[in-house]
Image 1: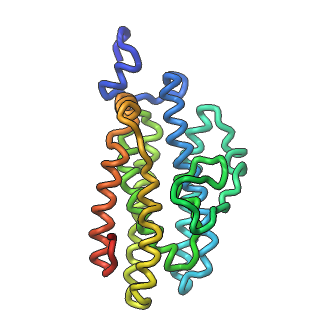
Image 2: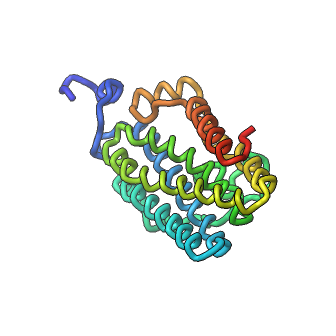
Image 3: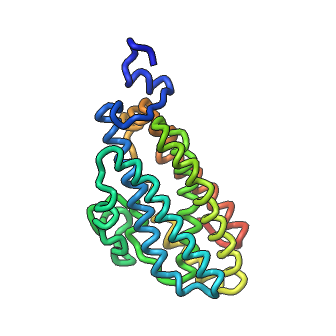
Length: 252
């Protein structure tokens, strides 16, 4: 960055930052919001999935589920360490919320929160059965994949590098869910699985959120976003439609 160029102009031209002490205040606020949402979602997701481990149909399934819980918690820890560099008390943070708390299964989509954390809306809803957990993990796993693809190009270099390390592990979670759903289709009535698909589709879709044009322009100029929520949701809808159709389920 040249001496006569502002940080804002530097970022708008594709520049990257690596020191928490050099970031503008608005940039810091948006970066912390992004990290907080990711950490809260990973911790809430891991807590919810932990409750379902012993419903797995066999030891291998339970080991895979336990590993997912471990890895999601580890991913939260990795991002929390970066948040700590911005002054966040990471130890207190991890113990601060009742991560297992959930709304009623039929609570209105995306309009309520169980606590004052920033988990994605989908993690406000409970899992009920092993099959239900597999369906949710597949649909959300595909959404996470798209989000992490976006996050790997963030202008804050330490966080982008962390997300690049996290991405292939999270991709494997989605692959395991797809393999598990294929197995379930062979063993379970497709109509029962379709009920879970129909339940989770709109809730995962809501996790992409909304953003007005002005805010998106600001985030893009900071190097914190490339795609709008609507663009990402459309890509996700196309992906899950293809995957579910191949398995024998509907995304309609």
